[in-house]
Image 1 (cartoon, rainbow, N blue to C red):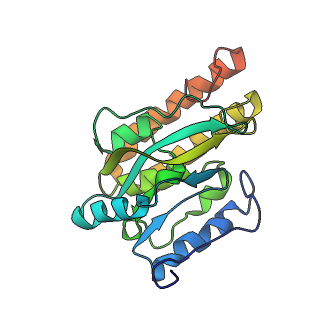
Image 2 (image 1 turned 90 degrees about the vertical axis):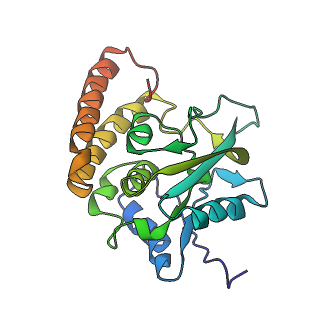
Amino acid sequence: YPHLFVTVFTSHNTYGKPERREALKPYFEARAVAKYIALCEGDDYWTDPLKLQKQVDFLEQNKDFSFSFHKVKVIDDKQKKLKGYSVPSTTDLYFKDIILRHYIPTCSLVFRKDFLPVDYPPKWISKVIMGDIPLELFLVDKGPVKYINEVMGVHIKHPGGVTQNKFHILQGRKSYIRMYKGLRKSLSKKRYLLLTIMIIKHRLGQVKDYLGFNKTLYS
């Protein structure tokens, strides 16, 4: 349906590479013709044929909401079922909810493109290894988020993931700190204190990682 969808593909995996910002550009350049943007990365897939319709219908009816996301099934590369993402206690989420807990599978995200700055993504994005979390925080800074409690996709976890080995955990801490510092300059001033608290949290996490107390990035 080329009259309804603009599809964007990257030629190679840009995870953790300097060209990540350039690779993200086509997604957001599609804003010239797109009203909503949906993401589905290479290790994920959608399972509900009405997924996009359900999410777009909600956003059409709720103009103040920045994006919606949904539940997914989590498996490993051998199709074994794993523990899923944390489930929110409410279906309406705000900035504090999103920054304090990682609820959102990237493949479940459908967002309103007008809620992003015109020059998104910022230059500092190329210095962090995660692209989904800063995107979510930019969006929720402008409006609340809707959680749909339906499984409409699959996320595959593998040994190279950011939370799956010690090296990536240590690199992840550095990226989180860079990300929160970048967000302090980019988001509204009312977010400054909470972002500073998150920087302190990850500084303490670096100490725990060094001492061997932490086993995962989200502990």
